Image 1: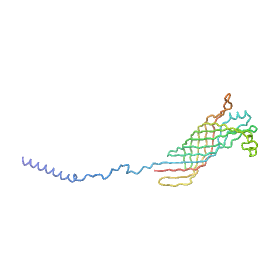
Image 2 (image 1 turned 60 degrees about the horizontal axis):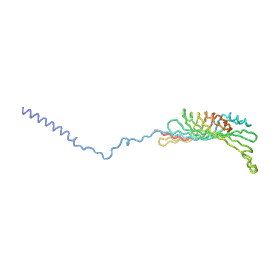
Image 3 (image 1 turned 90 degrees about the vertical axis):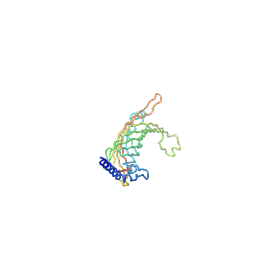
Image 4 (image 1 turned 60 degrees about the vertical axis):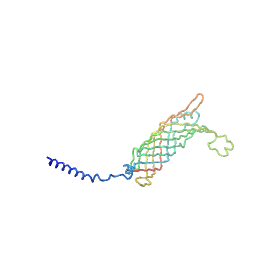
Length: 271
């Protein structure tokens, strides 16, 4: 029994010594110590370059607009004047820009009424001028090659001025002014209307210069556009009498159409 027990103890000791001998090389290896700060995973990744787009167009505009002057013309006729026309030629300028990947544009422009006709009563003259200041936005629904189609929505401020002159012409000669400087008199009445503008713009771009630089496309183009729409406006008014108080109000709503010519600068960055 002693011999068997001794043999078992010897075998157990030999097994333990073998396991220790096998594990010593692994236990003797040095533990790695970092030589510097551990780098963050985000620092090892390349910077993310998001796509973006910018499109800016500056243009000159020529067109026509109209307003309904019937109540004002009725007051002019009652006082011996002829009726004023409600159709005006306009000239102006504006800008439209897109600063995101979405086809949404911001719009702003100013237009001045030209060629207003005068209503006369003997030597007296009455003329009217209408300007528009617009701020709005558009959404491009079609973009094929150089052609684009964009509905627009905006708000307008419409200054209206009625000028009444009597006596000599509005620009008398030097001798007439020296002989009678008080022979020419004029009065200007001013009012302002507000309006909501619903329009549609069709554009065509003629590429002038293109270049590619570091995943960025640059384009310069000539833009020709036609626009049209309808203004839903308030009712501006002029005071005719003070006692009793009477007002002549008319509608500023009306159609408009115009031709634009401008320059566009577009930048697109891809991934």
